[in-house]
Image 1 (cartoon, rainbow, N blue to C red):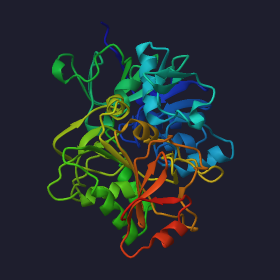
Image 2: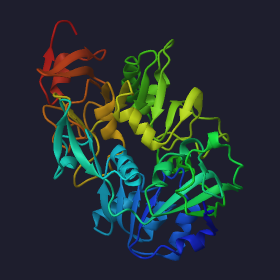
Image 3: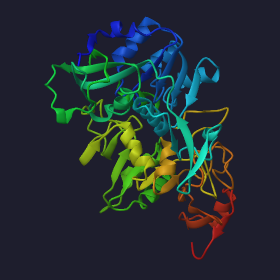
Image 4: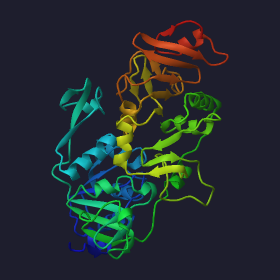
Amino acid sequence: MAKVRTMKAEEAVSLIKDGDTVVVATFYSVGLALDLVNALAHQGTKNLNIITNDAGIEGVGTGLLIKNEQISELTCSYVGTNAEAERLAAIGKLKVELISQGTLIEKLRATGAGIGAFFTPTGVGTIFEKGKERRMINKRTYILEKAFYPKPKFAFVKAWKADKWGNLVFRGTARNFNPVVATAAEVVIVEAENIVEVGEINPNDVMLPSGFAKILVQSSGKKIRPWLFKEKKVGGVVDDKRIAIAKRAAQELKDGDIVNLGIGIPTMVANYIPSGISVRLQAENGILGVGPAPAPGEEDSDIVDAGGNSVTVMPGGAFFDSAMSFVMIRGGHVDLTILGALEVDQHGNLANWTIPSKRMPGVGGGMELAVGAKRVIVVTEHTTNKGQPKIVERCFLPLTAKGVVDLIITELAVMEPTDKGLVLKELAPGKTLEEVQALTGAKLIVEGDI
């Protein structure tokens, strides 16, 4: 086998021309080939079609390509990390195609594996099934998703270590989309922090074998630390009712559970795990066994959770790529997911990804979590900031998933969607049935003592 070519970043990206398609591996700018992206931004290539997990951080990395208006079409699962991307999409200067995260990684995997299409339960009953074939398999409805065709021309991949044949090793959560993206394009350009001679990587340590990488670029070692941008831009005080919701939700955890926590109130649940209960927290960017935040100054740019927060990993934990993460999620290997909501109705339908004409941050991995986890709990404030019910008779916002919610926990009550309607299970201390019913958009069913 011939050795792959070694180039400087500027030389490698000079192969990319206006209008080309580039797949960029990353998750919240972690595991991003930053030197390659910056070189492409400096080169000024226009009308690019970029396929990537998210829109990155405003003005940095992939976000710089967006700010420079070098991207004509962005295919991703989430743009909510980048306000500029949302703004350009709203005024028609950036075409965005949203795909749920698990479907996106599987489309890339299928592309690299020579599989033309696959059936998935994700998106059934939502606007994402429009125009797609539906099929009943083993008494469950699936929709057909196609691989990317034609195969993307270029891919940017970031590795921790590479040898000169292109055997690759990744580190921590920087693995995320990288191994799969490295299979899914004609010309795979790998930016590696360490380039070593053939034979210096133990075969047991190889995470992606040679045969995929075409070009190697020595990385400068510069990385984006997403939690720093979050600290600058995200503020606010955690109020008592959000704490109360998180504490109550924590009571639903069972010893030994594998649990995925969504962004916002769900993340807070980790602070209130009951004594004597041991759970393993899963993050869809590739961790099982998420631990607490590290001490200041001990953050690791390659180890973050799905919200871009610096974290540690518990003893017995593991890292894996995004494809394996969604095998766990979509395959029913996650015992419990706790998600936020914009709306949830008496039938267990969930809407938590967009408010049309206001915000469309993207679907991320929420659709897969909603359809794949064994149990789905929604935690949310009972009403909007304007006092409108979030617990309703029927969702009016676009659905994330249909009929998936097992339990709803708010600062006022605990409710269970059932075939007969919304059953009231608990009232918060000091609250009355009449008070809660007045703030609920669906009829509450009372069975026995509350």
